[in-house]
Amino acid sequence: MSAIFPDSKTFVDMKLKHSEEYTLKAFEDFLKDLKTKNIPRNKLEKFVREHFDDVGSEFETWYPPDWHGNPKIFNKIIDPKMKKFAKKLHSMWKYLGRKIKKNVADNPNLYSMVYVPNAFIVPGGRFREFYYWDSYWIIKGLLYSEMYDTVKGMLINYLELVNKYGLVPNGGRIYYAGRSQPPLLIPMIYYYFKATGDTKFISQYLYLLEEEYAFWITNRTVKLKVDGVTYTLVRFNDETRGPRPESYREDHNAAHLMATEVEKEEYYAEMKAAAESGRDFSSRWFIFNAAYYQKQADTWNHAIQKVLWHEDVGCWLDWDLLNGKRRNYFYPSNLAPHLAEKILNYLQKFNLDDYPGGIPSSFETTGEQWDFPNIWSPLEDMVISGLDFLDDGRAKDFARNHAFKWIYTMYRGYSDTKAMYEKYDATVSGAPGGGGEYVNQIGFGWTNGVALDLLAKYADQILPPPKDWPSSADRPKLSFLCKIIIVVSIIVAFLKSF
Image (cartoon, rainbow, N blue to C red; front, side, top):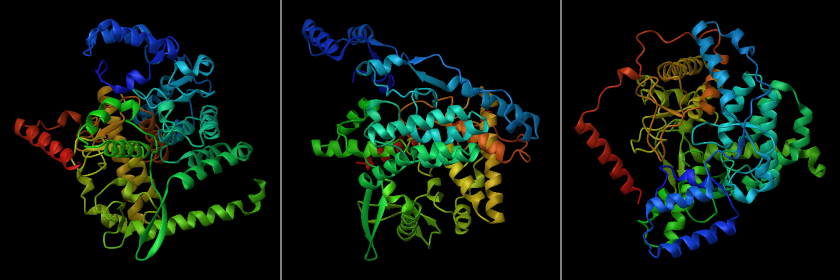
């Protein structure tokens, strides 16, 4: 709460130098010696430095042994500049690799890090540990880089976490163990199988995939009635109490506006549920196994179609559980379930071609990082992959055009800054995004993965952006009045949320 560090996550990632009991006793003595409730910032900072190690002390130096310089993807890319870009992306895996020290396993009470045996690729920046849904796009990129052993190790880590916690945690910290993220472990393993044909691996761990599925069915389903029919769908949720540890100060300060403790806890739960969404937020059954899950898939598809599809709009929309009605707002993830031809007409309403950077994550200007004007690789991938999957020429053209635009954004941003970003600005090609609880991060795992995926998919077609393609240098300067209007609109949106 004293804001010693600009980012609340910094403190909860620091290693204890001594035992919990010793540290708490030392802090009690520290407070007694001060004889005041107002702790001087410099003295508190000195205490923290004396009793905690810097972030990152849980890792040892690790170089991916299966990294090599000439994956087959390079031979498919026809343009020299794009091929060079792909090689730069490929080389970044070396710098995003992490391996946890054995000391974390031997002394878990000194760390917030969750020990896993195999090395992994992190997103980058403040995200020093592994993250669940980030790894889906990271793994897609690693497979194009032919880093099969690294991928297998990451998958084993996640499977062991399911065995330990019953779920894949949001990320590799104990404070994430109460929530997960979009359940993409099965698709990750599917892509690994497509690349390697390793059926032995899948059969060995199939029971844990079923266990993760059971977690979602047991803990995350909700029943709702639409037109007299009751449907079961899945929602994001979190049942732990208190603020998010990694954003403690931010959550605590926001909850200060709440009148009661019950309201505060409801607010904390909503924040953690949003974090779980990733948008911050026996042999007895073997014979019938496939049929059971096919039936489950059909049931989900039917419920999604009946509750979330709206013929008049031509798209899937979120359902507001509180008010029992649809939320008719644009988000790229609306397009994720089984895109239909009507989606193209839906997209045309929003003039998405007018945005040189890519498809914005929403059209709401709130200052939050998953809103306008930010664009994110996972959402771009959902739209591009979904449209390309359709047996429709117009849909495939739209997918290809926006794939090129997204590649140009990442390419231009890298050319300008020699960095890959967590998010970008839809209004200016190559410009990094902003907003939210922390500054834009570089690295960046899922951005690299999506870039490699698209470069591979369109290897024989993609060329560098034309010279007159708008870049970050062309960003218009905001007048002082415009800045005031934006700030006021953000404050109004924030107050309306309460």
